[in-house]
Image (cartoon, rainbow, N blue to C red; front, side, top):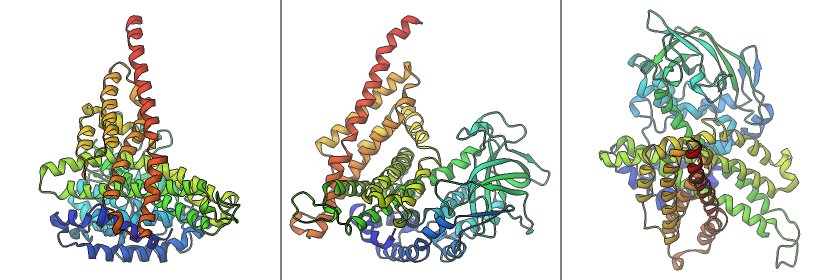
Length: 575
């Protein structure tokens, strides 16, 4: 992916559609960050991504990581690129100046990581958890741990991992067996094994900060008995900690990122946060990671679209309807439908993701309690939607873009097959998309009877919705209310339909995003043909090929809810 190719679109969405500079300048930490400064930052970021990171995409995939006696060697050029990355200050864009950061709005960091993922997903896995680790240490670690580790993580001089998963447990963190035994000096001895640890061992930085979920000896069973420990690869005296990489996985994609099996053998660590409250601290990291995974989805789909669009503009095949001669394949309606549909997801997804990043800063820095509460509600409800919907579309949309190439897409030459392989894991890690849907519906929406979601839909900014959009929002509220009632007699019901519910929410939010794009367009008389052509085809594709899925999902939801009501009297009689 070429980041500079997207720069004009992103500037338009930030400044004209979302009016982001005006919004972040209303928050004290960003009062001096005007649109011109932000534009300069993004321009330099695009140059760096295109010149230093994108060229390593294919070579990193083909060479992959090499495991040798507990050591992991990343592909040629990866270390140099990472050293240039952190020394230029890119990991610390949105970290606080007191912690060595640059104190810029979170949305600028989001754009950077969207570009990085699209340019080279494998390389980007290394710094992908930095901001989450920074937030976790900043808000939960002791003063002593902050003094030693916070700035190193904020600046990216040291990379970090999130060590949750164990072979027998998978996504069920309540089954974690790794133990942390307190020592008289205030440290702990950590013992256990973790799998699927991205960047658990590598040669990119001199130290790695592992954040490890484990149990204290007297901890209760289940997720309420988990504590979080900071376990560095290298201790303060320069000695190697008892942290061992046993092997790296051979994977479908992301060959440039080492996915490690890690063993902790009486490794020295320190408690982060309260005893048995490790998930509270870890979720700070996971929530940051989930937004970034949604951004990965946008970046990967943009990368696939760029390749497919360029190929469609060069390849000639058959005659398009109404043409007299052999046509470019971009003139065939079937190809235009593919390209415009993916463009609709990219553009609408960007509006949602960037708006969410702006809300993160409002939640942190607004002086208005009501604004902070509304922003927190948005982030809590929308983050799982972004993670699930955008990564799902990244894979399926990239596969559709591969289709544009025909048989050429299935061979390595054009690079599209790598994007499809790399994108698939984003639907799995940081909580599978099924878990995201359950989190949204069961834990977030039904927990308050749907009031939070209803309030979010009512308070969506911008002009009043069209009659059709208003009808869809009301339908979603009505389905939520009846679902809450039906779930009282059929507790399994929300788990059956959570995926359908999340998709319906995603489509309503995308409809709002596209309404914002449409409202920001000049009147047709003031528009150039180029501007009209840029936004009109994906807007039409959204209306024609994407939004109708809402009716499918609501039909499924209503039918399943009706079944729950239908079976309730029979169950009562049999009882």
